[in-house]
Length: 92
View (cartoon, one colour):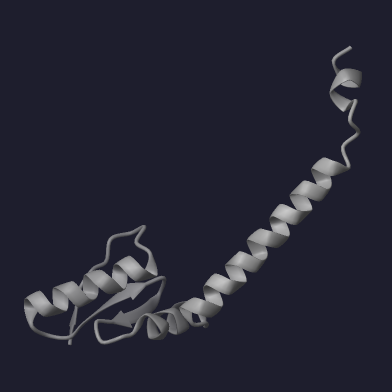
């Protein structure tokens, strides 16, 4: 199995897609380093996600969505708690 280099800034999906494309072109199984973990042209998207982040893609996306929703809720709560006349009091 041959090692290839993945461009920095790649997502897990784009890195795996590139590996699979290059594997077909070169007609051999390939692997690459991604965030100090190895991913393989034979990996499924879930295999790659589990190896890199310890969760399936669905679990990773669900956790990210949950985090984002909680962040947005807290941000809105913070904005709602700013006194309505705050700008007027501080511009004088």
